[in-house]
Image (cartoon, rainbow, N blue to C red; front, side):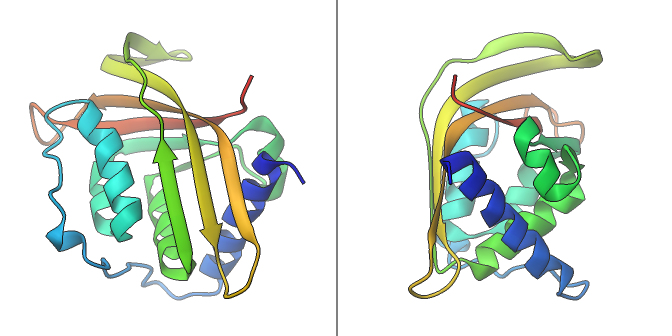
Length: 180
């Protein structure tokens, strides 16, 4: 099974587990209050906050990073696993929070890269937006002595000005892309 497929299966496992839980999918941070969290005044703060949220398994901080109109877009081949090609902020929060809760081991790395100014995403206006495309690797183990799931592809992150906090950035879109 290729790494992209294994990561899709990992997300599917989190989705199945989510389907079995009640309304309360919020996860207590493991020690996120001790972290020096970026203030989101720089675009790179968004990447640093993702990494810290995964390190400390802080779903609340992760959700705060996401724009109200956030969209996550799957790789085309993964849409069949989920029956959808994208989801919104609410579903991203639920899936990520559940992953934080279930994973025995969870490691995320995102490589450095530059940023480009953009004005649209597809045909949708995106005023003030910036994008970066970076290699990433995620490793997760959901049960003791279980399979270590690996995702090793590209992530495109598009940040936009925070509509509620002038001078700060939020993530508007994330695209999981295959390595070329």
